[in-house]
Image (cartoon, rainbow, N blue to C red):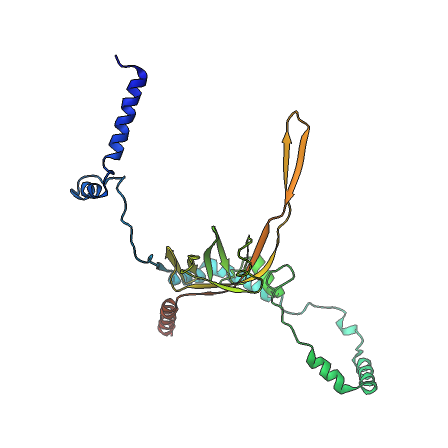
Length: 293
């Protein structure tokens, strides 16, 4: 009678041989898998490796008709109500004391004329021309600046619409739209990702996985060839401090270790579809408009 250790060794050696035999030679493995279609494919056979450039293709999902039907249905009526609620806030607020206010515009005009006569008018005009008029599109917290009516509509449930994309940046996937801010771990080298520099994310650098709009969606297999997402490095700073509490029982050991990770802020400037897809969408839109007319 065999001992237990010897029996286990024999079983282990037989299992290893059965696993290694089909894969000992790649050619034999290929013959084993391709000799008869009825034979189950060998799971240990090596997959063929293509030496060419990785294929950059994508699938187009056209849902313009479904989107139009949804907008004409009950959901679209609810969105129209949300937009109407925002448009109602565009008018001036009713002031019951407006009729009783005193008009002091004449006095202000006299004071301004006296100041102009006392000073040199040409110098003041030059100073006004020298100061540039800045148009800020974002608030101090980085959010996009919107009117009160737009904020009310969005709060009521109106859809923001527009294009969106899914990008892969240094191992993290983010769904972004235009004017969004992406917060990532500090991108290096800093000479490349410096503040104010613009970068294009596309299929060549393996960053663009999906692009979509209300009418159609382009699913990358694995990337969307021809589409682009333009981003700008807005800020390089440190994140909020993270406190790590450590304790050892019965040792009277308590520590609070804190650290701030370095982060990079990226602002999404534009999302561009492939040219051929934009041309097809334009043709379909013109055909639908002509058919409706």
